[in-house]
Length: 176
Image 1 (tube, rainbow, N blue to C red):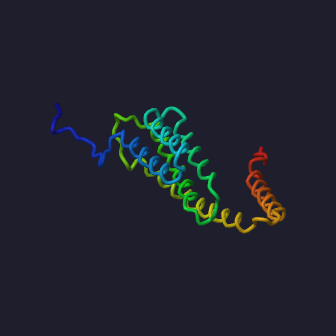
Image 2: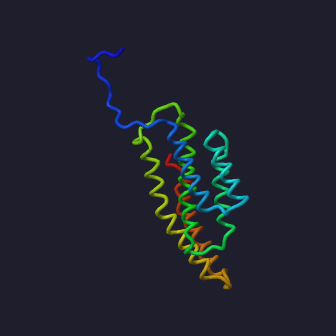
Image 3: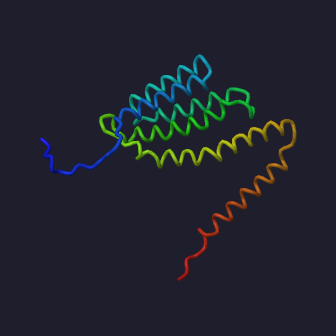
C-alpha cells in the first residue's frame, strides 16, 4: 500500500521491455522482404529473425546481418540500387537493436529516452557512411575495365598518412 505523502519520481513514458524484441522483429522482417532474394536466402533470413527474437543471447542477430549483407552481394551492384543503402542502414540498426535485446529483459520497463544516445550515434555514423557507400559504388562503376593501380597507390598513400597521423601520439614517449 502506498502512502500519499511519499514522493515518487516522475519517470515519464515507459515501454515494456519486450517492445525492443518486437521492434527488432519488425525491422528484420522488413529488411528480409526488401533485400533478400525470394527462396532459400529469404527463408534462412526469416528463420534467423525468429531465432533472434526468441533467443537473443545467441549470435543469431549477427548471423542475420551477415545473411542480409550476403544477399545484397548476390545482385549486380550499382550506385542507383537502393538495396545497398537500405542494408547498410538496416544492418547497423539491427546491430543496435540486437545489443539492446541483450540488456533489456522482456519483463522490464524501458524509458525511450535511455535509448537516445545509441540512436544519435547511429544517425551520426550513418550520414557519412551512406555518402561513402554512394561514392564507392560510383567509383566502382566509373573504373570498370580500367586499371586500378593509380587509384590503389593514392588510396594506399592516404591510409599510410592517416596511420602515421593517428599513430604518432601513441608511439611518443611520455615526458619523464
